[in-house]
Image 1 (tube, rainbow, N blue to C red):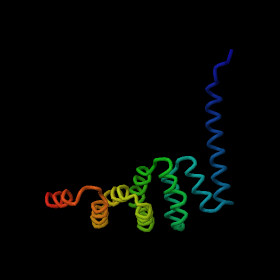
Image 2: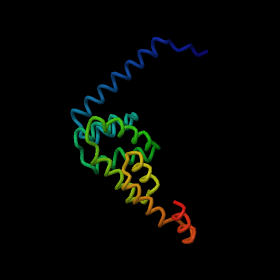
Image 3: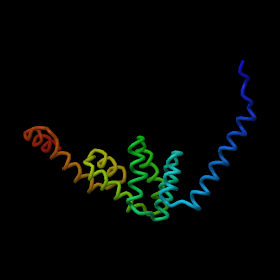
Image 4: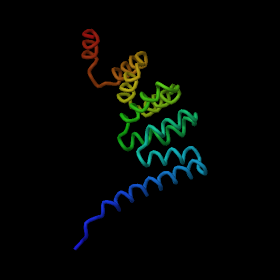
Length: 152
């Protein structure tokens, strides 16, 4: 028969995991590069921390897109990324990285996602332009489009 797990051993294991995590973080920070550090944080779903390091250390936009944005898209964390930006925007200038996210969505023709980000960050001029692009690309017949415009 299996013995019950010892609660103390579980607590010790958690402490050991924290120690291992801190050791890994130290060595990656000391010996790795920015991309390594960001990937390490993302591996443990520390999206805010990864974004904070990226913005504060002024990492290149391509590293930001290749690591953080693609991670958020792949694992369904776009809302978490948006929330992280909202937390960070109070303390540091995130304009360059927000613009990069919007450009990425535009380049990928993800106009609905782009629109939601523009509205969330109060870019109403950009949101109006994106709405027009969505309007032009919609498959609604022209007569219905005109009727919708008149109603609006």
